[in-house]
Image 1 (cartoon, rainbow, N blue to C red):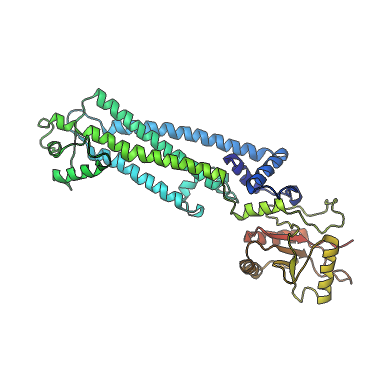
Image 2: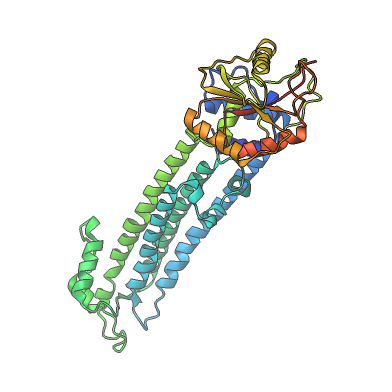
Length: 435
C-alpha cells in the first residue's frame, strides 16, 4: 500500500462507519492489504475527502522535503565559507572545522538511528511535530511508521546534500584562494599526539594525503608569533585530509543511511503493520457479516445511529459459550433465550466453546470491575476468541418476554467505556423485543 492509502485509512478510522457499510462478502480470499485497498476505493466513491486530504498531506510533505534539501545544501556551503574564512591574519583552525562539520554530523546520525529504534509511543514530541497533525493525533497509527521512515529518509538525503555543499564549497575556495590551515588546543600541546589523532582518522584510506609529523609541528597556531613565521607548504597540506574526512565521515555514512532509509521506507509500504487494535477491528468488521436482532432486516430506520466509538456486533465464526449471572435470568429463561437466538438469528452456542456470550444490563452504568473482568477473560482466552455482549434494558414485566429494549443513549455509554479495551473481536448487540 502507498503512503497515501495508509494515511487515507487512518483518516477514515477517525470517523463513524456503520457495520453494514463495511462488510465485504468477497473478503475471504483477499490479503489484509488488498482488503484495505478495496475498502478505501469503495469508501472513496461515497466520501472522497479523506483521499483528497491524504494527497494534500503528501503534497505538503513534498514541498517540505524540497525546502529541506535546499536548506541543507545552502547550509553546507554557508558553514564551509564561514569556517574557512581567511584574511591572512590568522591560520584557519582545523579543530573547529572537524568538530562542527564532522563531529556534529556523527552525533546527529547516531541520534537519528537511535530514534528509529524507539517505539512510536516513546518518540519525543519535537520529532512527532514534523509529521502531519492528523497522523500523530489520530486514533489509528497505521501510517505513522511509514511517515517516520519517509521522514528519516528525507533527513538522511538532506545530510547527503549538506556534505555535497561542504565539499563543493571547500573545493571552490581551495581552487580560487590561498588558504592556510593550522591547529591549536589548550588541552593538547604535543604535535606527536595530534599526529596520532590524524593517523587514526586517516586509517580508513591508509593515511594517504595526510599531513606528516613535521607539517603538523610546523602548523601549530601560536598567537604571539602571528602568521609571518608559518611554513606555507605545511599550512596548505591540511586541505586534502579535511576534504577526505568530510567524504568518509560525512558523505559516506549519510549516503549509506540514505540507502537504508529508502529501502526501509519501501518495506514499510510493501508490508505495513496491522497490529493496532483499530486496524484489527476494521479487518474483522470487513470479514464478518453484521448481526442485528431485527425481525425485518431491511428496515433499519429505527436502529440507533453508531457513534465514533461504536462496537457493532458481527456474526460469530464459531459457536459461543453463554455466561449468565443467575440474577439476570432464571435458568429456564436462559435456555429459552438461547433457543430463540439460535432459531431466529442463527446464533450457535456450546458449553465447550472458546468465545463468550454475555448479557450487559445497560440501564446500569458500566463499572471498572466490568472492564477488568473482560480484560482478564481476554488474557485467559487469547486474542482470537470472539466476545458478543447482548445489551439489554430492564427485565420485562410481562411473561414470556425477556428484556426491555435498551435506551440507545445507555448503549452508547457502554460502548464508549468498552471501546477503551481496544478489543478487535468484541461486539455489542442491542436487544430488540420480538414482534
